[in-house]
Each structure stands twice: as structure tokens, then as C-alpha cells.
Length: 356
Image 1 (spheres, rainbow, N blue to C red):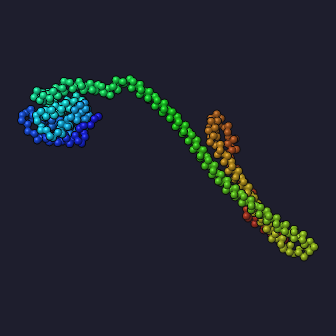
Image 2 (cartoon, rainbow, N blue to C red; image 1 turned 60 degrees about the vertical axis):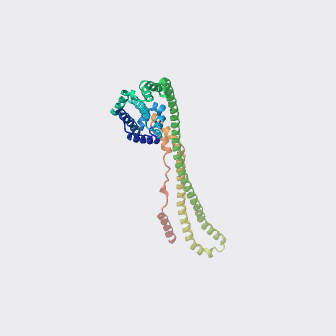
């Protein structure tokens, strides 16, 4: 849509010319009604420029710039001939507005249109020709221009356009289906990756726990070795001492009797804690075995969940024994763990036996 009346320049020109018309003094009734028509049309163009731009496209193309330039010309005096020409142009715009509107013109516009129809002979020659052209030939020319416009050409080629649109729709649907398939594939892949990453994180957690347990196992093993040496050392020391003093055994007998009690006590305590550490060592090894089992489960649990759901539909009890073995925990038996008080009782019994 070409814009003419909605531009700032045109609005300024229309406003100034409307004031000029208001300052004119008509000499007869014809000039009075002619000036009223000009003022009515110019004022409407000023107040509703979008409507005139939309409904008067043809005359805007034909005489739009000429009309604005004629109104903006301040050098020439507003003679009857010039005002008649301006009135004829206003009538052309008004008549196209009338032809383009769905509804009838407002009462004042209809009166102005009838004024021109009834007083054609009173206009100057050029203005009269413009008015007669507008009444007789302009509707046909407007219809011809509209009939040959791009919009009508599109209607003429409706079948071709419709077929093209249908083909384009099919192409879009095919492309959309292909994209949806890709999206579904990506969604499935992402879902698998998500599950895989979850199990990887779980596996890493078990792996870190296994590392800590291995450190704990190695520490217990070191203490077991130390206690083993501590248990054997006093006995070996006593034997070496006796061996070196076989000739004077009677002289060192009292010393041996005195040292045997702390030696036996040290060995007994060492044996007790050796048993405690040994049980803890076995417990840690059992825990490591359970952790390794769970690390192994993390590797196959994803596919197993899908497989088990399918096979259980056929036979609900087919995997019970398998699951009871795989998913059962390996629990250590702490029934044989000697308590501290048990160790103290054993030492007490040993002291009583020595005194007796």
C-alpha cells in the first residue's frame, strides 16, 4: 500500500491548505459549496490518512503527487480555475473512496458527490473534463487496474498455487516426520546415555569405597604382621636365652621364672588382638567382595532390567533363583569376634593358674 496522506509532509500541506480555504470569501452559492467540498475532503484526508491511503490506491498512483504539489503551491493565486481543478481532484479521490467502500458514504460526502454530479457544467473546462472522466471512464480503468493486479493474477492461478501449496505441505510434512524421527532417535540415545552416566556415577562411588577399604585392609595386614612378630619374638628370645645359658641354667632359673609371666601375658594379649585384627581383616575382604559384586552389577543392570521385564511376562518365576544369588548380599558372621572382656577373662584365668 502506497502511503501519501499519512506522511508528515502531506499532513502539513493539508493543514495549511485547509486554513487557506477557510480564509476565502465565495462570491456565489456554487463557490461556497465547492469550497465546502474541498475543505471536507482535505479535512478528512488530514484526520483519516490511513483510510484514504488504503481505499484510493489507484488515484494515488495516478495523481497523488500532483494533488499534493497543487495544494502546496503558494505562489499562484487561488483563482476559480485553480480551485475547480483542486475540486475535480478531490472528487476523483472521493469517487474512488465511494467505489472502494463496502458501505455507503457518510451523508456529508454523499451530498458533496451529488453536488458535483448536478453542477458539472459550472466547472472550468479542465476541471469539467476531469469530473466527466471520473464519472464515465475512471470506474472502468480502476476495475481494469485491479483485474490486472498481482492479487487477481494469483486468483487466476489458484489451481497452480493450490497444487504448489499442497506439494509444499507434503514436503514440509515429510521433512517434519524426518526431523521427528531424528529427535526421537536422539531422545532415545540421550536416555541411554543418561542411564549409562547414572550407573557410571554409581560405579565410581563403589570404586572409591573399594579404594578406602583396600587401604583399610592393607593397614590391618601390616598390624597383623607386626603382632605376628610380637607373638613369636618373646618365645624365641626366651629359647635363645635358655640355649645360651644351658650350663648355668640353675643360676638363671629364678630370672626365667620371673620373666615367664610377663612374656606369657604379652603373648596372650598379642594373640587376642591378633584374632581381633584377623577377623576385621576377613570382614574387610568380605566387604570388598560385596563391593566388587555391586560394581559388576552396575555393568549389566541396565540391560538386565529390560531383559527381565520381557522374560517375566512369559514366566514370572524363571529368574527367582538367579536373582536370589546375584542380588543377595554377602554378610560377614561376627559371632566369632572375641570381645574385650573375653580376653580379660582369659588373662585372669592365666594369672590364677600361675599363682596356684
